[in-house]
Length: 235
Image (cartoon, rainbow, N blue to C red; front, side, top):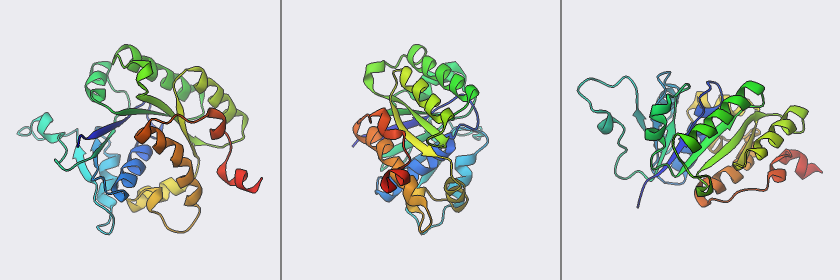
């Protein structure tokens, strides 16, 4: 069976790439898909997360794409174990355009996280343009999608963000709320799907459309992403 490669990409720092990468790979580990997490960012946040991960949880194989010893070739260092079924790539901020094509080569899906601010919207727009024009990924291939990250639903800035994102004609496949659950999950070396107790059930629910697109290519109706699941249940 071939490895499915999911690349998390945005040239701007602080957009939530590592949050997406660590939570996605933790979900895959729970599903028994023997995932690997490739950390391309020299800040090493994903690598630190793996270091925090307890042996009681399903294993995530870590790969480092930075600080390689001189006696180790890049291709060898970036090669996942043969049993790997999912490879998640956490990319750095400010990724040079000449590296974009290499990192996205053979990617099954490419996720662009964007936060609700003008700076983030501009960065995401430029990123998508580079994917289409530099990496030459055909829009109809359904390999590129946007995730609205750290949002507060039912606010004007959120609705403005969603209207803008849908105008890009790139699927918006997930809306993740602004919550400390992701901070707590990172510190524990887990994903929200692995947390117990608390309010993470709302966050797990928000991942459903995102995972459906990654695994099955199902594009959600944008309006279905606009409301908070908790409010929908109480309505």
